[in-house]
Length: 56
Image 1: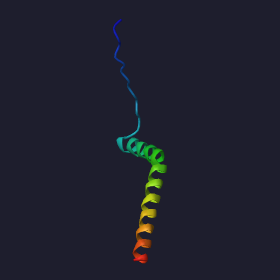
Image 2: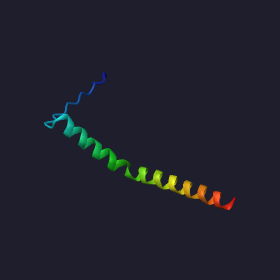
Image 3: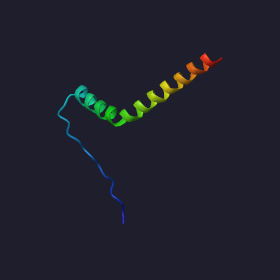
Image 4: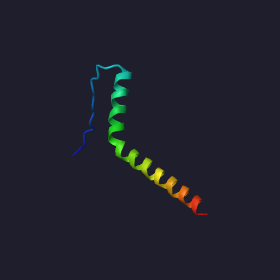
């Protein structure tokens, strides 16, 4: 049996700028926890480096 190729079409009545802003918001929300974790890890490393400097 031959497989059919699926075609999707989306009607977007918004301007390109509005659509881009919406997608940006969605992506930011999806990655907020990853960003917060990366910031926390970076801050922890900086604190450890400062503590090492003071011990020497």
